[in-house]
Structure formats: structure tokens, C-alpha cells
Length: 207
Image 1: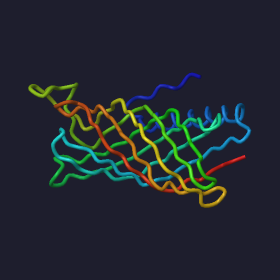
Image 2 (image 1 turned 30 degrees about the vertical axis):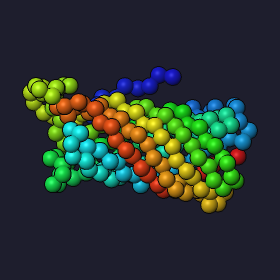
Image 3 (image 1 turned 135 degrees about the vertical axis):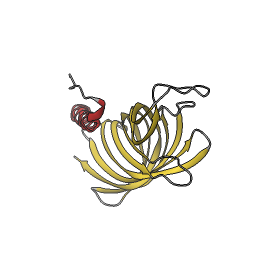
Image 4 (image 1 turned 180 degrees about the vertical axis):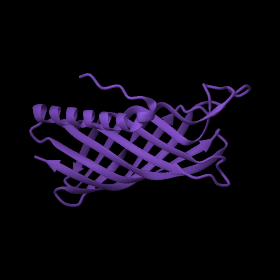
């Protein structure tokens, strides 16, 4: 499958393509391999604990949309789009908006008819904007001259969560905790090791 090219400024296009591709692929595998296939979409509140140059910690707040389709027993594919914001205040020099779009495998373990746990490892992109980033990679001793208001980097999200089924088609995402690694330029290590937590509701589509 050939995916159309998107420029960095067309980041929303990338989000839609990756999410739709993951959803369709997962649904196709589900139909072929699992008679008890299941797909769902989750809407969650999300918060990320991050640090500014590994010194000052602060919280982003926002929301996420996740698509998931199981294609063989507990194994499936998930795609997640998260949007976060933190304004400029006493702990943060400049405001920052962050969008991550990641996808990859998820394994779900249903240990009770109303409860399940899952673990996942997702990769994709992180896009920071409405902020201040140094050009290039920079270094601790000699950051690259100049700044820009947006930057895009690789993103890795790994973790898991606990779901509680309320009705046949509605579940609650009681808690989800993830390690989120991004590589946005910051004039220092150019690495961000973040903690992400979320909770919300899931709409399930089962056969």
C-alpha cells in the first residue's frame, strides 16, 4: 500500500492516514483470523509529566483518541492520537502544544468477563509547535544558532492499561500508564523521557 506524502506543515494529514491505515489493517486481519473479532474506539483525558531540560518538571493536559482492532485472540493493532497543551507560566519558559501519533501491536488479556488488561508498544511521531526550539540537534555547550516555533521527532509509547466493561458496547478505561519518549530539540540532550497517564471511555464493536 502506497501512502501519500505529507509535508511537516500538513501534520494533520499524517495523523489521519496513519490512524485510518491502522484501523483498516486491524479490521481486515480480524475478519480473516478471528471469528470473535472485536474493535473499539477510546476517548480519554490524558496528562503527561515532562521536564524542561531535565530540570523543571511540569504537566501537559489534553486528550486522546485511540483505535484498536483485535485480529488473533488477544493480539491486535492500535493507533493513538494525543493532543496536549501547556501554557507559559512560572515553571515553563515558553508555551508548548504537542501532538503525538503512534501505532503498533497491543495484547489484551481478559481475566474476567467484565475486566481486561492490555500492554502495548507503539511508535510514530511527535510534533511540537507554538513554542521555541533550537535549529538542528544542538549541544549542551554550543546549541545551534537560531530558533523555530515547531519541530517533529520520533516518538515511542510503551505501557498498558485496565478496562472495565459497563455494557455490551461501552467500557471504562479506568487507567492507562505509559512511558513516552520523544526527541525534540531542546539545546541539551534532545531527549524527553515522559510519563503519560489517561482515563476515559471506550465504545466497542463486537461481532
